[in-house]
Image (cartoon, rainbow, N blue to C red; front, side, top):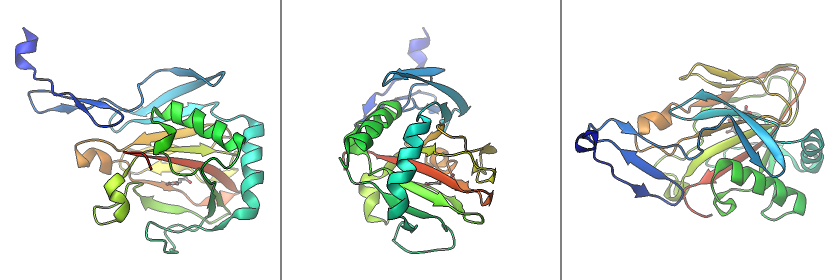
Length: 231
Ligand SMILES: O=C(O)CCC(=O)C(=O)O
């Protein structure tokens, strides 16, 4: 009889299905199905849910030590000052960074394929893999990863993010979500996942996050952003 009180509307929008209840309490299915581990690419990636809606998860063993090192080495001679959404240099984001080209090398393609499987979005929806480097005092102040409604990229907006930590940071450099009370310490090979593909913009807004200033040591991360449609 419960079915009488429930009206399910199924919407398929490229990569996921949403279910909307008749009581207008929206319960939206996440892009990534919640599991305690994922077996892919000949490895077991373990997962911890940090928040359910919006979904925020920590993954362990996403990258091996050798892969972290190879990413750092391939990126280090190509870093330039990081910019914001309108290509402006700002004190909001003081790191340096670079993007790998699509299909740049078999190594990068293999990593991107693993990430796409983990994020449950086809690789064709991804931006080039980005490497970020922070020296002591550098940071990325609170921001959202999706584009505002007036930005040209909002027509095919970002829907999810994977931040992979390429080294252990001695002190500082946590990724924090001030509206969710979450702080994640960078640990080599692990990754932080979150998505902002919800109908209710208030849920997406909760993904405000920052890279806290590095206090001691340096911080290297690789970031992958997925879009609603192929790029
Ligand atoms: O460095 C971090 O911990 C956060 C990076 C970040 O927020 C981003 O790349 O959007």
